[in-house]
Image 1 (cartoon, rainbow, N blue to C red):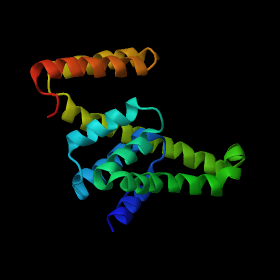
Image 2 (cartoon, rainbow, N blue to C red):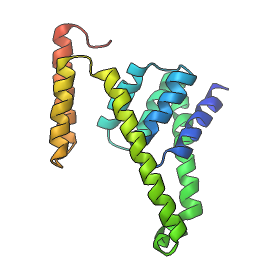
Image 3 (cartoon, rainbow, N blue to C red):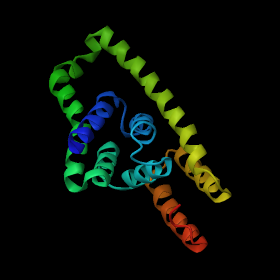
Image 4 (cartoon, rainbow, N blue to C red):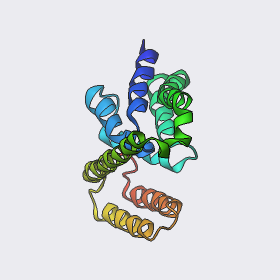
Length: 179
């Protein structure tokens, strides 16, 4: 029953995760932190950070981490399957419309509306997660540095790697690697 629960929890998120990996965060927080209490806000941030730094799709990486946490390897398989199944269905059902989207004003308008909703979800996520992780001057310094780096349209990989190494060194020195 746990595996079916994992599948449908991620299926629900995958069904509404328009716009990329970060759009799942608000949904995942609501589902896994608030509703099911499978993880804490801090663990959500940790899973997202790991998901971002590894190759692949962020939402799939996240599903694999949380699925493994809840049910080992089989839990990962069910969670990842639930996450990708809605997208696979949508692609199969709507593939012919994607190439013709400009010919359908209703579809074009709907996608413009979805983009606005995704932007709002990302903005909300940014503020909610900032309150969780920016608890020290060090964290604020890393965040501002990464923001400036990315603002100049440079590769986000560099601040991720630097922040990971700096965080490891800083918190290792303080003896607070895991909070």
